[in-house]
Amino acid sequence: MDGKRGLIMGLANDKSIAWGIAQNCAAHGAELAFSYQGDALKKRVAPLAEQLGSSLVLPCDVTDEASVDALFEALEKEWGKLDFIVHAIGFSDKGELRGRYVDTSPENFRMTMDISVYSFTAVVQRAEKLMTEGGSCLTLTYYGAEQVMPHYNVMGVAKAALEASVKYLAEDLGKNDIRVNAISAGPIKTLAASGIGDFRYIMKWNELNSPLRRNVTQDEVGKSAVYLLSDLGSGVTGENLHVDAGYHVVGMKAVDAPDI
Ligand code: NAD
Image 1 (cartoon, rainbow, N blue to C red):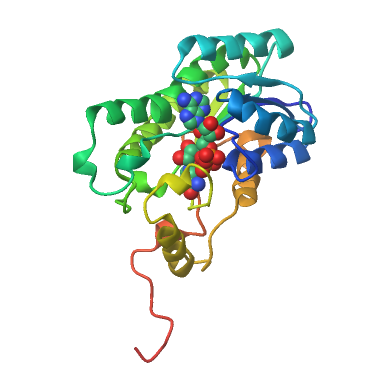
Image 2: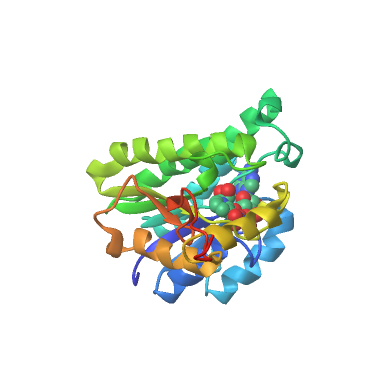
């Protein structure tokens, strides 16, 4: 990724999936900028960015259009062109990430869709103008978009819309050699994940039932992200790459004991 410049959105701390992606991009030679949501997170994001040799750390709350505009204006001024973006942002009211989907409130439905779905389109819209020599855009999704997972509720509906957005954006931007993909990550213990009801049980279930018989790490998501963000993935767009220890292919797991 030597000579490539990319924006990482969604870094909250060193447990974030965005951190695994940033570390791997930097290890492969990419130059990085980071956005953070609110002053409280700046204190955490700036030292992490510094570890990867980046001092371009900019505020952006995706619910505020002016803040998204300001982020891309700052990047244009600093770099002129952009090669890739990583969107690792999602949010829903924790009170609705348990219990039944049918009980979702209209306010939380709209907020979840705005932050977790529309924001990707909003940033790709602005990134397109800076990707004058082609580019790669990546978002993060989860299997709860495809199949019902306990407590994932409105976030599953949002991720389904996000995955559809990836396909529409891929078609719109493909003629400018801009690729748009998603990684569907298996469950990983992060700040956002801790808001999901029974998350430890979900992690244990995945560990016991995935083909690799374990969970994945931020670093593994990061390695696959390098493939999609770099020229290694130059022929791939509109894709949803599962980095989940294979969990998504299992219909029913065989019982390991042969006599049952
Ligand atoms: P995380 O808490 O580390 O990251 C979530 C990020 O979203 C935070 O940096 C937060 O600041 C940002 N964010 C939320 N609202 C925002 C707003 N209004 N403006 C700007 N930023 C905002 O958790 P994570 O698990 O690393 O999440 C990253 C992405 O990965 C999310 O889209 C999540 O749904 C997805 N994902 C997570 C898992 C998992 O098990 N952890 C699995 C699959 C997909």
